[in-house]
Length: 226
Ligand SMILES: [Zn+2]
Image (cartoon, rainbow, N blue to C red; front, side, top):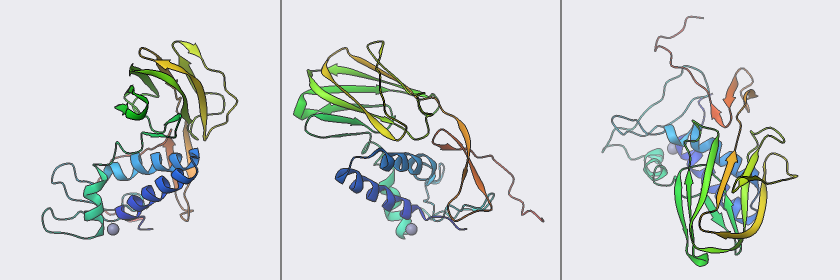
């Protein structure tokens, strides 16, 4: 019931990256995104900067933070790396393909191809992202992640305002092969649903998810009697 240590999830992200390198399948990035937003992002105290040890699965449980400048255990060492890694997995590339894995505002300088891209989004506060080619030109396949949490057929991709047809199902990549040039705009609509998800090994509780985001509520700190 204690749930994972922060360093467990740190290692799971590393493992997902390694598996994705061998086989670029969307299921690894579905996991990566979920772990990033719902665990890693919350593993540092916003005021004193301490790092979180366990994140319990039990509702209204407590978390233990490291004492800044004193503690040096597993989740502290990996914990301080975590927040410098957010840019790592947004894009990956093959020889002639570019994978859009994560919906995070960013800029990419793909040196081998001489291509520059900019991603603008407030995701997950908005269920959409916009990718623009801001420099260079060339042919490559843009692989857009179709997340598992978007309903079948609900994902929309527009290239320069024109909808891209596709056959793929959720948890896959949609390949768009064309000659790209500065000024091209790719708009991706990612409608989120609110669903109840069972929790692995914790049958007493369920998770309420909105898109890839676990919903939570602030409660008081009293121990409940019942
Ligand atoms: Zn640890």
